[in-house]
View (cartoon, rainbow, N blue to C red):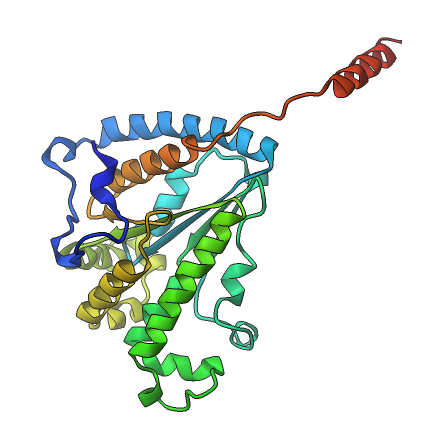
Length: 291
């Protein structure tokens, strides 16, 4: 397994239609073995998070972007299971509220960035502002942007400005110790239909069904173009996009868990060193306890 196969860092061409949505042959129908491997990966992540939290120097931002039914919720549930909730936050970004629209368009996500020692997980993110807004440009009219008074004003210049904003925001975060992992769960149209049908036909999954998901499906081609442009313009060496085949949920979870561990494992994490003065304090405390 070569994790670089799923990374795009902005060099060379990127065409979303050429990216796999299914696992390689060696990993098809291997759910039992994959689950066992993910369980091992969770232990590695738990150990790394303990050092991350104790060292209190780096923050980790993991964000997931995908079309409906690609498995974002299940990804977070299964890959991040067992991490210490005291050092982890999960934030879903849905339709902006009136309060959020009253601020700049990055405000609601900026305030949810991780603190030092923390892992923050975004279920969707600021990238919605060049995905949903690009497919539905009328949304931008609610964002109180000077000079934009009609849909005609929502043009390519705006998207290029936002791509630039994202690159600069992420570079700023990096300089302040925040490591950003960006995952696009790449689902095929056929698999999405299959999962939507399951939400309707299987009673236990009815609660997941939303008529709006079906309505958005008619914009499939527009979303594919928006994702392709987003990945092309916001992938950098420091903050690449990882395009994860998502037709097989367990394989996608395996790849994501491997990438997270590889990126966090590359950090110089360690437990804080105890100074001589602190050691003397420990001995003094021990003496008091024994007394």
